[in-house]
Length: 327
Image (cartoon, rainbow, N blue to C red; front, side):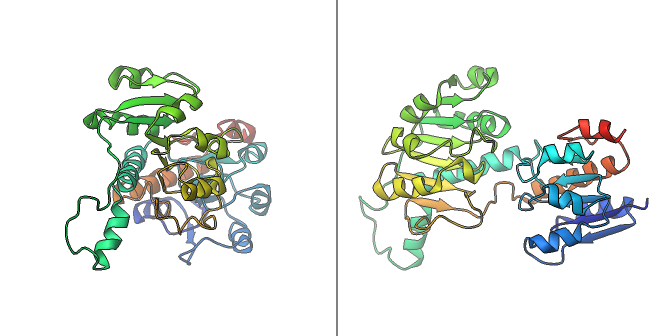
């Protein structure tokens, strides 16, 4: 079919092969970096579809530059980088890749929890530097995990998966969400509480909420002060959910014991002072970075894009009303 498609960053080959099998032209960003604003605006001109990433800001300006575009297929489960309302009024379909990265991201949240609690990164640096000369009873004392209280903020797919994986550690589970989660309550005895109670009681607080106006800076100075001084904060959701300046202060002042972050408020920029904190583990947004998961995301994004171009309802359509507007 005579479709002209642009991919804003190189994705696993399985996705590109699907696009090439259905489209007359498939161009991929040749640079191993995010496109500049000017480059993005130029690249989308004349395209029928665009496969974009979370790092691409897709707003009205981009949509108007891409006058012929019918779909922006986001290579992510989140889509806060896209102005969905602006797309819908223009009859542009928006899609995402939900579900497939649930296990990978919840596994990484656990990896961060263990790394911070047991001071893995600090100990690794210490050992590599040749400082390990003998065993000592006070060397890198960390936090116990088994039998402690895990607080899940946002009990959707990923938050639920993390809670369910706590069974082997005999943890008490608290969660806060707009809706009850009967599965968690039945399988792990989870208790739904208000955020304030969760913060006061949890030894580990793991964030799994989407970024919305209501969740921006959900965790700030006031919330951090509610937490135990021995508590650890994990964020694999979206950076702006946490007031990063307040977190840096809390880490330096000992308001909380530590944090594990995969996302940042002004990603990829870090809040000044964050990198200097020894009690935080910092990752470069790799929650879904397993070979199988990223390949499946590429397949899903490409399949979504092709369906929209062919006038069909994509499997993962964020704004189905856009198709109705197109008639």
